[in-house]
Length: 307
Image (cartoon, rainbow, N blue to C red; front, top):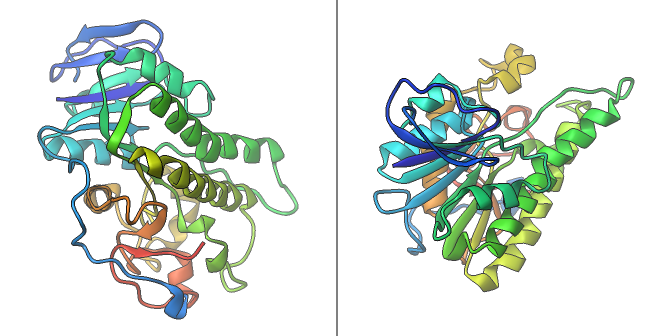
């Protein structure tokens, strides 16, 4: 079984059967369902830790109704896991994914963790949480748009950390659980360069903040037996990157369906030994602008990225 979270009222389900959870009203039953040598490389073979995304495991996908989040949800379902997916409002694609959907969940709401925990069965515990929800708006030095920058900080950095805090306090994450956040190489200060250019202050800064939040979270969560990882998904062809569509071909942009399996593999590889890492499952391929501007050398899949 799979579960998903969304915002708004629960629509009339007409596809595959799945339980739908609403954070406001509880369960509803319906019919939806280097930089040189400093960069380290990681083998795809790691020490076993927790449960893999497979039959018998419980997975929460935060932001599962479109783009990468939808594809991650589908991939987890395909692997046989019981998946919960959150979003502000569901849609037919998510309804058909075979997930249990929890609607009315906005990551920018600092009480999001309390709402999610309250909507779940009391004994529900997650083996893996994958936070995909994000926000990307453009800005320039001449048109900074501070209000938009604040929103990106709320969605990308503060919300996912607040969610982790509440899930841990509510006992929804346990020893052996994994907490993965989709971030971006755009948050790596060490990969910014004159050849790439400036602008998009809010995007770069909020992702750098998310990486730091994740790093600190990994330190606090490790004694509890919980692993944390920040994952750059690759340069994706999604609604969020439409303003970079001019570079899709040159910079090896990939569809979310291609990135999702690698991301779930990266979650499976999480341990307490590698907790706190910031990695690129695709390696150099589809890394983005920094790879093609000569800022970073050849990277193997699942390599760590500089901060």
